[in-house]
Image 1: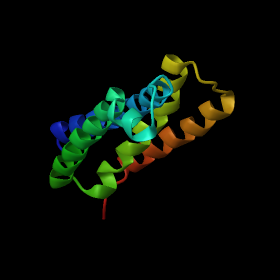
Image 2 (image 1 turned 120 degrees about the vertical axis):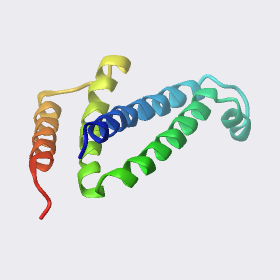
Image 3 (image 1 turned 135 degrees about the vertical axis):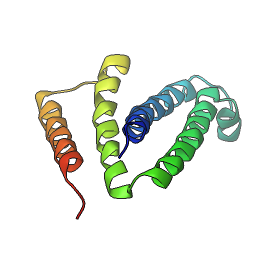
Amino acid sequence: MKALDYLLCAGFAVALPIGQLLFKWAALYQAQIEGPMPWKLLRNFPLMGAFGWYGLTALVWFYILTRTPLSTAYAFSILGSALVPVMAWVIFKEPASWKFAVGYGLMLAGFLVILQAKPS
C-alpha cells in the first residue's frame, strides 16, 4: 500500500465513528420533536445529516477498494470501531469501564498484527 492508501483508510476509520455520533445525536434530537413518527423523521435534520455522511463515506470506501485489497482495508474498520466508545464517552458522557479499555486494546493489537501481515 502507498502512503495515500494508508491516509485514505485512516480517514475512513475516523469517518465511521463520526457517523455513529451523528446517529446518536439524531436519536437524542428525535425525542424533542413533536408529532407523529413520519413527521418526526422528516424534521430530524441530524438524521438526514447522518444518512448523508454515510453516503459520502460509502463513496470513499468504494474508492479505497479500487486501490487496496479488502482484507487490508477492512482492518481499518477495527480502528474505527475502537474509536466509537471513546468518542461516546467523551462527547455524550456515556459510561465506560476498564473492561472496555481492555477489549478495545485487544482489538487495536489485532489491527496492528493484521497491518504487519504480508499477503502470500
